[in-house]
Length: 445
Image (tube, rainbow, N blue to C red; front, side, top):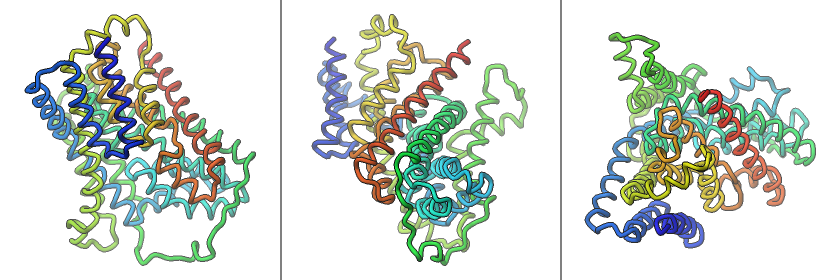
């Protein structure tokens, strides 16, 4: 009982220190890790050793992958590749299906690009198309924001799901497969919700006179170039997962060995990173420097890597404390399945605002409990990562920077922001966990 109380206090401390006291999540996680270790009576030498092992081991598994993913996203954003993808999808889906178009555009763009940045990039396009269609910006903006949030939390190579997969030791290919299945289903529900709310609340799309005439001096890359840095790593990772399946569907050959190497997440994302260097119209070596695009991506990556490492240290401390054996008899009698990681992630997300922090923290807490929860096989681990991501969408509100990006750039009142964006994020998360649970029933049967 003491261990369980200490774990609850630790979670509460993470929330309080990051929201009320405004601590950086890295500092909060590190402090709580030491607090939990001392509280459970672990020797000081064990505490220090555990922190080093958890922090170093996690970063060693995930650091390069996060860096490569963020470099891909930065090059797509700054080269105009993200806008190329958006215009391509508009042509395919059609302007008359604007809610579906914006939802799917957000979904694709946010796989490599952060949701906040994605909304800023795509908002002018959304406003122009919304005004042209004569519909409410309330519906199209929410379709776009949910598309961005959806893949941002559930589909690698977004940093959050990648970090969670590393902490839990889940197969990234399976995470991608189940993440795509779950998130696309949930996004469908959200787009229907967005269209309905758009019919109830009208917000005019105010387009600046110069916005459509404003031309950048940068020539955007082709659609093929824009897709390659995203598609190639995903395909390689998924093929590697298929090749490693127990039944060996691709057989055993030199080609399979090569595929297993190329499909390693670190290699696959590195290939995607190299492909992203083809995106700028004129490649400048300064882009690879400390003050260039790569330098900017590394600054963003450093924050995520540090938080992930601290989360890994916290998870290792929980594992070493032996809480598994303490909660085993209680949890095994309850068929809670994927609900525990979902609920825990939702609580942390709602309380402190950051989806990435919620994902990493929840993964760190859940990891030592997987065998106890009966979620320790590779399929279940992948689904746990997706369940955590689904929870990290619930609920986006005033303590989330994304909430303010969406509301301020669309002239939503705060009350409307809660009615539209916050409510839609709840619909997204709940729909996702329902769909994922149904998938688990089918796969488990």
